[in-house]
Amino acid sequence: MSDAPITYRGTVYPWHCDHMGHMNVMWYVGKFDEASWQLFARLGLTPAALRESGRGMAAVEQQIAYRRELVAGDLVCVRTQVLEVRDKALRFVHEMVNESSAEVAATTTLTAVHLDARARRAAAFEPAVRERALALCAASAERV
Image (cartoon, rainbow, N blue to C red):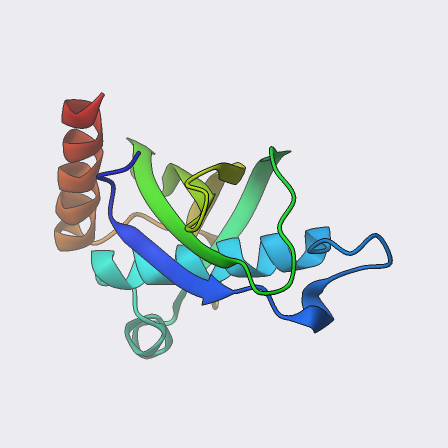
């Protein structure tokens, strides 16, 4: 995934670490969540656009694999690939890498659903959003 778009860059701070001295699982999820919002914005699903349209995004499935520990001071980068685009949902994978060692620290695969926030039901993506997601999905397939 080294050529997939970067959706997050950050640092592991001491308060991210647990009693074992490595980044606690809640912070992996938080950093992946920030990467998800960067992906959504790239598709045109910015927080402002979602508020204005009465729409939202919700994760409905997430699988995480922890590969290497991260400790305070580590610099991390998350890259994201879109795996599947459906009328009302996206499936994508984030890969978190320790930038100093180039080792994959964790991966997560998510399924997110586009919602009508008022009706609290899944809603189809706007055509422009769907096209951008399909373009990212096709780009991901070409990299494989």
